[in-house]
Image 1 (cartoon, helix red, strand yellow):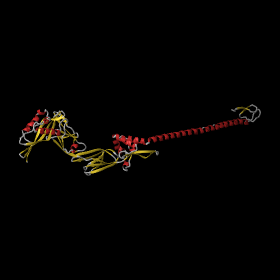
Image 2 (tube, helix red, strand yellow; image 1 turned 30 degrees about the vertical axis):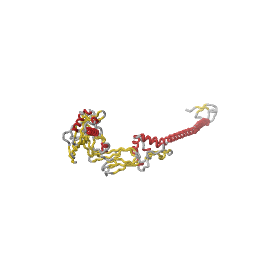
Image 3 (spheres, one colour; image 1 turned 120 degrees about the horizontal axis):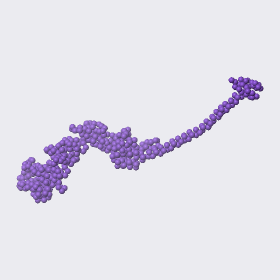
Image 4 (tube, rainbow, N blue to C red; image 1 turned 45 degrees about the vertical axis):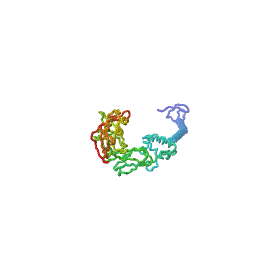
Length: 468
């Protein structure tokens, strides 16, 4: 169906199929053209509007550039602040005093990180600086706080310590700008001395070597000064011997004696007494009152004591330092009991009693050696015994030995001893020895006194005649 419109000239109705107006004859096709032309500017306007939005986007470019510049400036300022703060922190961290404080702290604890603070001029030792090699220094100073304080004081004053063993010196730079300090330590050496071959030598738990000579010195080092434990371990005369020595090595050379010592000695006591060496039961004293030890190990201290049963109760003697007794050339050791008379005191007391009574009762001081003085039966027995001797002969009397001391309890002891009598008559000399048993010596008023003088047989242990 044709679309109805109007003639632009006369307004008469026309059809879209009409080329000319049927009323006035105006050409219609050319009149429709302006309608199409009218739409074209509108499209152009829209295009122009579209094109005019472009500058709005271009107006945002400078604003974004300004924002980026501000961010960069902020980052730069932050970096500068961090760098300045870091510089100030590191400058304080690497001051000589603070570095020394950290070194002393590491040195004072056995598990501190000391290795990074230590240096040495020894070309061999400088390649061995680690936590293990510096630990002996830490052990020494952690156990000797006063020495650590002395060390720190010396280093703070710019001085060396322990004959130049320790100095605090600059050792390069940290972060290119800050002087770095370290504890410089001189090397130490140990000379291990032993007296047997086929003996293993140890530093701590590490085996160093096996000796090949009876008298040779073995060198250990270089090492850092400090506390070390050395040990020799071997079998001598069928006995396993160990000599362990803990020493504090200083810079330079140090002698360490690791000789394996043996000793031959005799422990005297009462029959049946149990002998202990360094707390270990080693045997029982026989009827002869002795127990002999031959080539017994003397590694370290050797201490002896005996125990015995008295009135159903076990009592313990005083402990004797065997090495000290041997130093005094005494190969016979007699452990004594607390409050009980010792061998030398008993012998001296008995000698005074015999010497004082052989000339009768004229010496009143002799009676004071006995419990009860003149009323003591033992005192009177001695006087009567000497009175019975032949008046035509002269004599000497000597208490030669105390052969046994048995504690009775309550500061009392039963004593056995030997007396030698020498008689002179008609140009002849006779010597007799008697053993007395059952003597009693007690402690009374702070002094030892004779309670009973003891008994002996009618026949001497031995006698001998000497012509003048």
